[in-house]
Image (cartoon, rainbow, N blue to C red; front, side):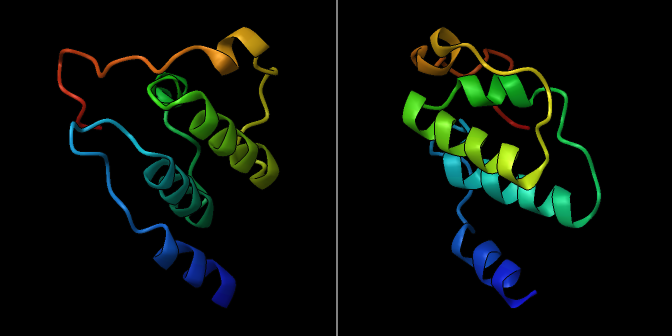
Length: 93
């Protein structure tokens, strides 16, 4: 329990300056959802694609190991695709 609190405090960063998600904000959100028994949001794949490939892989590893992401495997092309820009409707999630 203490480890979860320490992890949550360490990951207390918000979205980036342009409103795009960050590795830390996605991991923090997934941790909160896991603790409250909630599923991942439907747009998690799109949000992951706005991360750099290195950050995307780290978040995917976290989601798989936590049991939050149990769907089909991601292709290497999808994993390494360059980060997409935020959507024009605004990046507020």
